[in-house]
Length: 207
Image (cartoon, rainbow, N blue to C red; front, side, top):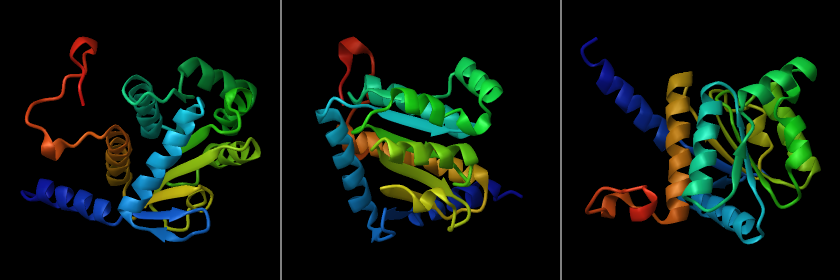
C-alpha cells in the first residue's frame, strides 16, 4: 500500500473535521464555541484557586500525565493525573479496578475543581464511575471520547468532545491534538503567527 500514509493522514483530517462538541443537555456547539467554553471553565478553576484532575486508561493515561504537567507548568492551572503506578496497582488490588480513579478523586477533589476524562470508547467502567464521583462532589466534568456515538461518557459531561472515528489509533491521535488545542488556546499560543521556535526553558520561556 504505497498510499497508506496519505490515507492515514486523510483519516486523521476527517476525524478532526468531524469533532462533535455537546453540552450537558446534548445541545451541539460549534468547535470554536466549545473551546471558548472549555477555556472559560478553566479560567474559573484558575481564578478560584481550584484544581483540575485528569483520568484515562492506557494511552489515555499517558495523555493525562502529559497534560497534567503542561497545564501546571505552562498553563498555570494546578492539575493532577491519577496514573501513578503505585496508586493504580494499590487501588486495583485493594479496591478493584473500577475504583482506581474515583477513590483518589473522592479523597482530594473539592467543589469547584474540574475532572477531565479521556476514553477512546467512552465506556470504561472506571471512567464512568469517576464521572459519577465528580458529580457527587460538585466538579465540572469534561469528556473526550470516540468510536460509538452513543457511548456513556459522552452523555455525562458539562462539555463533551467526541471523535467519530472507528479505530483506537485515530481517536487517540486526535484526542492528543485536541488536548493541545485546549491548552494552546488558553495560553494564547498561535503556531500560525510564530516567526521563531518556542523555547520552554525557564530562563527564556515565551508563548
